[in-house]
Image (cartoon, rainbow, N blue to C red):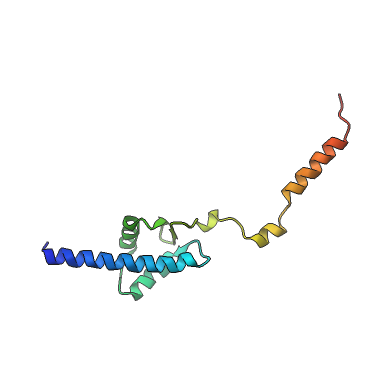
Length: 116
């Protein structure tokens, strides 16, 4: 490989890294924990980087900017996968109040005479 080719290849990957970090920053700033892989590939294609899934996976792993990547989704560092994310506050409000249940059970146990 000629020196000029090496320099062009390095410049390509440097530019790709900047674009990837910019795109990831846009997603991390939103409320999404995961990015659809195909959507991310299309965004990179719009920026002039046509990458196969394997090329994208290899590049992201070398850049160390994601915690996981598969054919369906990409999880950027600092985010957790949706299936591990905590439910939002609205879901918690409609759920069972475990603390109140424990308190009621404890009060009931104290009020009942023990059988000895």
